[in-house]
Amino acid sequence: MQVVRVVQEELHPLVVHGLTRARLSGEGVPRQTALLGFGPVAEGHLATVAEQYEHAVKLPDGVGEMLVIGHLLDADGEELEEIVLDGRTGRVALADLESRFLEARPLATDLDTLLRMAGAVEELGSGVGEFGGRFAGQYGPEAVTRLTEALREVADADGDYWTIAVLIRPLVRIAGPGDGLRLQLPEGLLDDEFGAESGAELGAESGVRPGAGSGAGSGTGGVARFADADLPAALTHEPTRRFLRDVGLPVDGGMFTLDDDRPARTLAEVYAHQGKDLLPDGSDRLICLGYLVEDIDLVVDGATGLILGRNVEDAGLRPVNADVSTLAFTLWLLRRARAVDAEHKVTDESYAVLAATMREVLAEVDPVACGHAAGGSRGDDGWRYWPEAFDDEAGGAL
Image 1: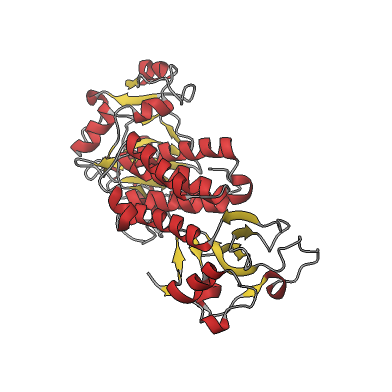
Image 2: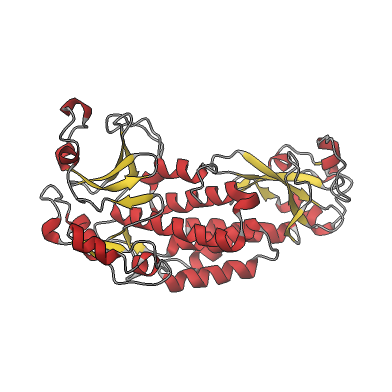
C-alpha cells in the first residue's frame, strides 16, 4: 500500500491541529483505501475549498476555509465527493462541491480515526492485519453480527459512508468456503430471506418444491427446490444438482425470476424454434434457470456449474456468477442492501458508494461475477451483469 505525505514546511498554514499535522507530514496516509483516495496529499500540497473551487452561490460558513485532502471513490476509482479537513479542529467531513449539496457532513472526529476505520474495512477484505486476523476464518450469521459490532465501535460519526461500511461490508462473511461450490450458505439463509407460502403453488405446478421458510422475505415468492428427477440429465455437475435439490433458489430474487413455467430445460429445448446458428455452442448442456432483468436468460453449464447469461437481443453468452452458490449469495446480498436503504435512505445521496461497496463485496466471494476479461464464449465482450446492475442508479437495482 502506497503511503503519501506532505512535507511539514509545505503544509497549508490553516493546518494548525497538532495531531493532524503530525499525521500528514509524518506517518502519512494511504494513497487509496476503502473507497477513500488522498490525491491532494499525494500531490504534495493542500488547498482550501475557497481556493480550489469557484461557485455561483455563497459557500456555507466555515466550508470555504476547509482543506480538500481527498475524495470518495467509486469502484472504478472515479472521484465522487470531496473529503475536507478542518485544519483547526482536525475534524474530517464530506462535501459534494460540484453540486448543490455544499454542506459539510461529518465523517470522523479526526484523520487518525478515519484511517483506523478505513484500515479495519480493508483488513476485513484482505484477512491481514490486526482486525483481519481477529476475524480470520469466521463465517455465518454470528460472525456477521460480531463484525458489524466491531466496525460500529471503530466508527465515531454518523453518515452514509459509515452506515454502508458497517451494515454491508460484514455480509461478505455470511457464507464460508463450499464443497464443490465456492460457498457453503448457512442452513435456512434463503428461506429466512425469501420464504413465503406462495411458493407452494409453484411446486404444485412445475415439479419444484418450495422452501419452508416464512421469515423476512414473506410475500416475495418463496424458495424453490428441484426434485432430482426433474433435473435434466445434461446437468452432470453434482454439486450444482445437490444445491438445487437441497438449498434451492428464490422464485423472485429482485433482479432474477425463476422460470416457473417449465424450469430446468436446456437452452436448446427452450429455443428449439430458432435456427441452430442463433444458439451458442453446447446449448444442449446449458440449463435454463430463469431470467434476469434486461431480457437475459440465466443458464447453468451442466458440465461445469458456471452461471451464464444469454442476452435475448444479441444471443451473446457471458458469465454472470461462478456457480449457483454465489448466484444465491448475490440475490441475498441485493435484498440486504435494499433493506438497509429502506431503513437508512443511503441511496438518496450516496448511491455510488453503496454500488461500489456491493461490487467489492461480491468480487471478494465471486471474482467471476465482477471480472471484465472477455473471451470464452461467443458474444462475451467482457460486460458483466452485476457490476453494471449495481452501478445503474436510474435502473434502481439498489
